[in-house]
Length: 304
Ligand code: FDP
Image 1 (tube, protein in one colour):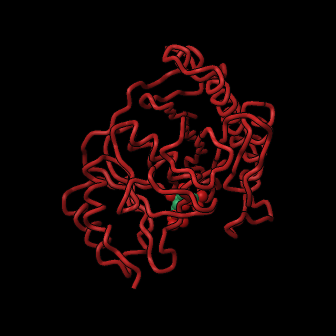
Image 2 (cartoon, protein in one colour):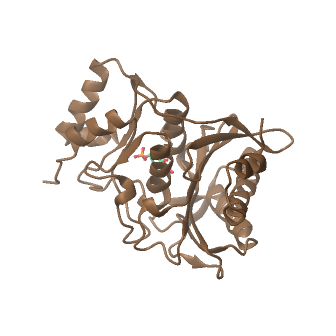
């Protein structure tokens, strides 16, 4: 099986972009080591959204920042854990990331992940997800894996004991199949449209696969090659909870590259413009037909 370097050289990824992917890969390996041994308690600080930070959130963010600071090609970063974008230098690449997504699952030992979106830009504001040149998600579960796209399909790498990443799955494609991951179910108390859709999925015999972590929940759609993940808004959070820049746009780029789709109910997530770093969006992501169904059934919701 090809390793990380052989694969990207083989498909003709240019040296600078490969170097950025290498920095991401190194930080993922370090985070994966730390998750196994570091305390899962709170850091005693809050992030920009007022959420309690775990010691691991802070550590994962530091690992990534330290790694990126050593790469002169990365000129700009933005982290879900930080209030502003940070200019590192004149490098042409800008990387936004969620260092540890699903932190509420760390203490119960469920899978969590990191998410990276890579742009060529001098600010993230005004960008759309479609401008990404690459996207990566890392999954820290019983195995550590990466899903990567450089705009040429989606592949999976697995971290081995050596440690190195080897190619474990090529040409990942999303087809049709009955699997659902219904996030933010509390919305059904006031959203009849979402309640009806959830009931429809159940009546049609869809299999429920939902862990509460966006990275593992969407990752399973890639690897099973079927399904839908939903996180709609409701009165308390009309745009839902998930962040456009740090979570939804990189996932959407990967999903479209695998032949699936990602929508906010009305348009592709990749066409939404980033107005500010903390911007949130409802998201329906997975097989094309499933996403279309969500648009049809949920896309007309207005907050009353
Ligand atoms: P977490 O708060 O544990 O970090 O955006 C973060 C996220 O997890 C997603 O990974 C997950 O899909 C979602 O929040 C879960 O949201 P709820 O708290 O509404 O269940």
